[in-house]
Amino acid sequence: MTYNLPEPAVGNSVSAGRASDVKTFAAAALLTFGAGMLVLVGYLLLDSFFGGFLGAVGAVFAIIWWRSVHEKAFPRDLPAKSLIILAVVNAVLGVITFLLTT
Image (tube, rainbow, N blue to C red):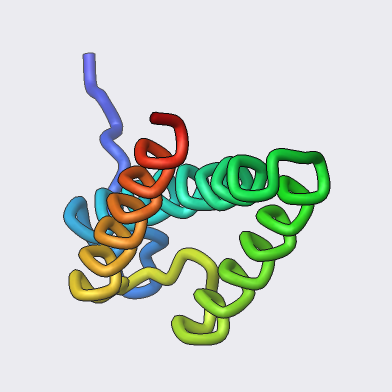
């Protein structure tokens, strides 16, 4: 029995490699987590729905800014520096949330 194995994509491939895919996944997860944290921090700061709404507006503007810097929300070749900065911002938002709840 002969199996016809597909040829690997050459030239205009969708993926730029496994490392690029992992960085894109991490960016998507961190952007989603960061947006939620901004809503939570806004809610905790003002202790009302309005604070959560302001946090959501801030999250939308942050994602729009991220897209303007990288020309796409999830670019194929995301610099590691951007991913590290995003992780640090999420860590700071986590610390702020922890301090606001204690």
